[in-house]
Amino acid sequence: MAVTKIQIVIVGGGAAGLELATRLGARYGRKRHDIIVVDRNRTHIWKPLLHEVATGSLDANMDEVGYRSHCHRWGYRFFYGALASIDRTARQVHLAPVLDDQGREVIAAHAIRYDYLVLAYGSVTNDFGTPGVAENCTFLDSRAQADRFRDRLLDQCLRVSRAM
Image (tube, rainbow, N blue to C red; front, side, top):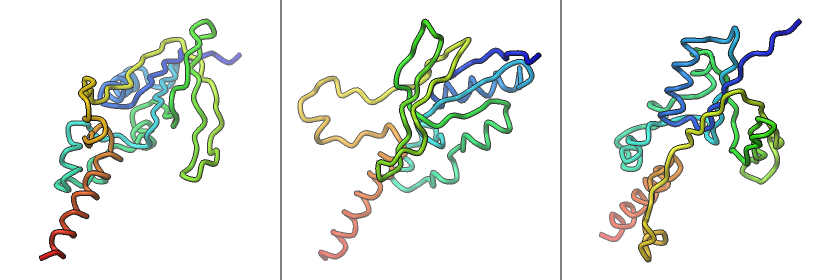
């Protein structure tokens, strides 16, 4: 008879979610518990370092944590995807389909059951509704935004150096 493991689902693999999954995995392992981290990114970089990535003073590839290797080491599983909804009655989280850069489906929408659910999906920059901020500010909430800032900065440096 197969024993159903206690399933702990952590939505969000940022600093809090990753720390929790690491501690739970180290403490409980995989024998009677199934600890799952769901994140919409394949890797994690500590958010307070994004300004260094944006300026090029930190190579994010050297400092980011790959969930796949980290989960193997620390006794949890990683599901790549974004939270679409939560069904509290059925005790399931529903994940949106994962699409590639051309809009083709890589992973279909699916549900994951949970016994315990932790929502640790982090924060985003608040512009407090100040007119013009959202349209004119470069936010640093993700690796992609930091990379985009660095590319714009380098492009501007090239423009200036060629104009002289």
